[in-house]
Amino acid sequence: MRLPVALIGLLQTCVALSTVNRKACQYPSRNPLDGCPKHTLVVGPGQTFTTIQSAVLSLPNNNTTTPYYILVLAGIYTEQVNITRPGPVYLLGQTSYPNNKSSNSVNVIWRAATGAEQNSSLDNAYTSVLTVAPTLNASLTGAGPTGFPVPASTPFGNADFRAYNIDFINDFADSAVGPALAVSVSYANAGFYYCGLYSYQDTVYVGKLGNAFFFASEIAGQTDFLYGFGTAWIQSSLLSLRNCGGGVTAWKGTNTTKFENRYGVYIHDSTVQKANETLEIGGKCALGRPWNTLHRSIFANTYLDDSVLAEGYVKWSATDPRVGQGAVMAEYADYGPGWNATARKEGNVTIVMDREEYEPYSTLEKVFQYPFDGQFGNVGWIDRSP
Ligand SMILES: *[C@@H]1O[C@H](CO)[C@@H](O)[C@H](O)[C@H]1NC(C)=O
Ligand SMILES: *[C@@H]1O[C@H](CO)[C@@H](O)[C@H](O)[C@H]1NC(C)=O
Ligand SMILES: *[C@@H]1O[C@H](CO)[C@@H](O)[C@H](O)[C@H]1NC(C)=O
Ligand SMILES: *[C@@H]1O[C@H](CO)[C@@H](O)[C@H](O)[C@H]1NC(C)=O
Ligand SMILES: *[C@@H]1O[C@H](CO)[C@@H](O)[C@H](O)[C@H]1NC(C)=O
Ligand SMILES: *[C@@H]1O[C@H](CO)[C@@H](O)[C@H](O)[C@H]1NC(C)=O
Ligand SMILES: *[C@@H]1O[C@H](CO)[C@@H](O)[C@H](O)[C@H]1NC(C)=O
Ligand SMILES: *[C@@H]1O[C@H](CO)[C@@H](O)[C@H](O)[C@H]1NC(C)=O
Ligand SMILES: *[C@@H]1O[C@H](CO)[C@@H](O)[C@H](O)[C@H]1NC(C)=O
Ligand SMILES: *[C@@H]1O[C@H](CO)[C@@H](O)[C@H](O)[C@H]1NC(C)=O
Image (cartoon, rainbow, N blue to C red; front, side):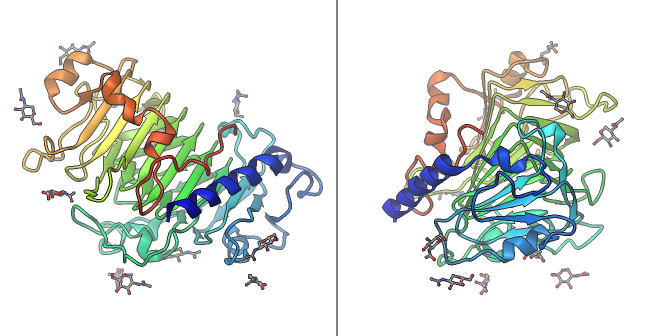
C-alpha cells in the first residue's frame, strides 16, 4: 500500500514544483487564462462555469496524476463545493495580492447549521461550505467516542487538494447555535494557503484519515472551531476569537493497535486573538477541551492575547472530565498576555511540554501519515514555498 501512495506523492510534487506559477494565473488580466497552467478552468460571471461546483464536476475522475486548476474570478459564490475527485485539484482565487490573505476577492458562502434552529438530527457534514472527501459516508461526523463507522472499503479520496486566496464563509448565524462548518476534510490531503475560514461553531473539521495544512490563513470561530479525528497543522496563521465557548480545539483521538498515530491539531508560530476590540472576553477563552479521552492538540511558539483563559485548556465537564486517560492538551513555548505559567500549573489540565516531549510533533514529516498503514512522512501534497 505504502509504496504506490508514496510514489504518487513524489510524482505530484515534481509536476507541481516544475510547472506551476499560480501567481501569474491569479493576477487579473483581460484574458483570465493568461499565465495559467494547462488544464485550467475559469469560474466566474459570464464564463462557461458560473459555479465552482459545476467546474469541479466537469473534471475527469479517472486521472489521479494530472493536476487540474480552477481559477475563480473575483466575486461572491453562494454554493456548497464538494471535491470527490482523487486526482490533484487546485482552486486559485483571482487576486492582485497572492501573498496577502486580507486582500482576497473571492468569497464562497453557505448558510447551514445543525442544532435547535434547524435540524438537530442532521449530521454536521451537511452544513459545510467546502467538503473534500471521497464519499458522503467518509465525511460524516457521527456520535460517540469513535464517531461514524466509515465502511472499511472506503478508498482514500483526493491526495492533493489545494486552495489559494479564497475565503470560505458559513454565515448561518452570528453566534454559535450549532455545528456550522466552513471546511471539512476526510480521507483526503488538503492545503489552504492565504485563505479565510469563517464560522462560529466547528469552523474547521478534519475528519477520519484527513490531513490538512493551513498557511498564512485566518480561522475564525467561537466554539470548538478546530475539531476532528485526523491531522491538522496550522502554520503562521491567525486564530480569531469571535467569542468564547467550549475551546478553540476539540479533537477525538483514535486507538490504533497496528501502528502509532499522531492524529491531532498542531498550531505553530501563529496568533490567537480576539476578532475585534469591542469583544469583552478577557481571560475567558479556553485553548481546548477533550472531545474524547484521546484528544491531542499542541499550541507551539504561538502568541496568545489576553482573551485566553489563564488555565489554558479545560476539562470536558465536571461530571465527565475526560482528562488523565491519555489526552494531550499541550503547549510549547507560547507567549503573550494569555500565557500564565502559574495558572497553567495550578489548573492541572494543560501539559506544558519540554523540548523532548515536543520533539515528536515538531515537523510536518513527523505528524502527517500515509493513510491505512500509518507510516509517517506524507508531505508531498504540501506547498513549501507558497
Ligand atoms: C476518462 O474520463 C473522460 C471523461 O471524464 C473520458 O473522456 C475518457 O475517455 C476517460 N479515459 C479513460 C482512460 O477511461
Ligand atoms: C491523465 O491525463 C494526462 C494528461 O492529459 C494523460 O497523459 C494521461 O494519459 C491521463 N491518464 C489517464 C489514466 O487517463
Ligand atoms: C494586505 O491587504 C490589506 C487589505 O487590503 C492591507 O490593509 C494590508 O496593508 C496588506 N498587507 C501587506 C503586507 O501588504
Ligand atoms: C432532518 O433531516 C433528516 C435527514 O435529512 C430528515 O430525514 C428529517 O426529515 C429532517 N427533519 C426535520 C424535522 O426537518
Ligand atoms: C455536498 O454534499 C452534501 C452532503 O452530501 C450535500 O448535502 C450537498 O448537496 C452537496 N453539494 C453539492 C453542491 O454537491
Ligand atoms: C454508508 O454507511 C451506511 C452505514 O454504515 C451504510 O448502510 C451505507 O451502505 C453506506 N453507503 C455507501 C454508499 O457506502
Ligand atoms: C466584533 O466581532 C464580533 C464577533 O464576530 C461581531 O459580532 C461584531 O460585529 C464585531 N464588531 C465590530 C465593531 O466589528
Ligand atoms: C481506547 O482503548 C481503551 C482500552 O481498550 C478504551 O478504554 C478506550 O475507551 C478507547 N478509547 C477510544 C477513544 O476508542
Ligand atoms: C491532576 O490531575 C490528575 C488527572 O489528570 C489527577 O490524577 C491528579 O490527582 C491531579 N492533581 C491535583 C493536584 O489535583
Ligand atoms: C497568573 O495566574 C495566577 C494564578 O491563577 C494569578 O495569581 C496571577 O495573577 C496571574 N498572573 C497574571 C499576570 O494575570
